Image: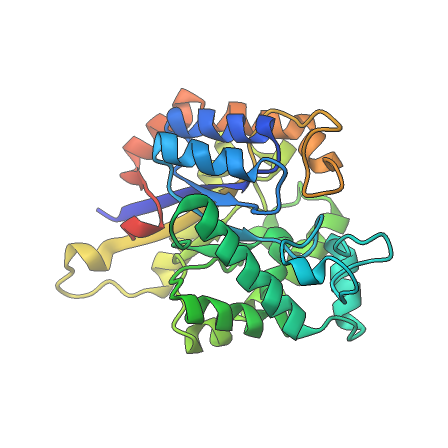
Amino acid sequence: MLQVKLIVTGDDFGYCPRRNQGIVDCFLAGAVSNVSLLVNGSAAADAAGLARRYNIPIGLHANLSEGSPVCEVLKTNSSLLNQDGFFHGKMGFRTALSKGLLKMSEVKQELKAQVELFRELTGHLPPHMDGHQHVHVLPEVRHVFAQVLEEYGIEYTRVPVEPGLHKCDWIAPSLMDFYQGVEEDSLNTVDVFTRHGIRWPNIYIGLSTMGKNMSVSNIWSAIDTAIGDFTSKVPSPAHPNPQSRTVTIELMVHPGYPSVPPIGGCGEGPDDFSQSWERLHELQTLIKPELQSHYKTRNIQLCSFKDI
């Protein structure tokens, strides 16, 4: 029987106290097995303390698009900032990048500063590092990101290519356009990350199951589709050993109790995404007993990056 190791990563840990509490509640319920920390989040220190208290596996959610940089010299007069003195935003960052306005030396400076702050907050380097709003797979950025991971010996990242995504007709067209852009960037990043010795799970899931689109059946379906896609491409060895029949999956999730302004955010206050009822919907879905029992039935073991 195929063994499935599933990393359920709660993104945006450190965004605000209510997001932190929601993610911790999911971890304690056995619904989340790993977290990704925003070190420029308003509650990052609180999040690091909670991870220590509850022994929650924690990595770095590198942020170049929302709020303020953590590198002191970049807080003024940096190509990474808009006219208001904050990062350019999810789409603004992509626009600035496409126009050649971002200095990759400053991107590297900020990424290294975030790794150092992570180490200061947690007492260790991140075992894994990914990008807030998928900035880490963007052109140019992907090279700098890979260099930083290699320099620090950070072994794991995320490559957001989700099997079966194109068939998910419940995703709004505008969102699907963004997701397909992320997928294209990710596919173009694979060789770069591979050359730098960076690894990632066999399968990524999380775009088709985000927010209001998350349901027990959608998570089941995404996992089944992904495993089917993976096993069809990987031939079964004539004499399989247990390791050869193990598949690793990362499920990206964003559970929490919705942020209440003005508390939260990364320097600009909480955004609509964090204030949405969809954060609570994800939390309530992930802790449902039928999802947990499905994992057991399908021989799915929840784990963190150190377990793969």
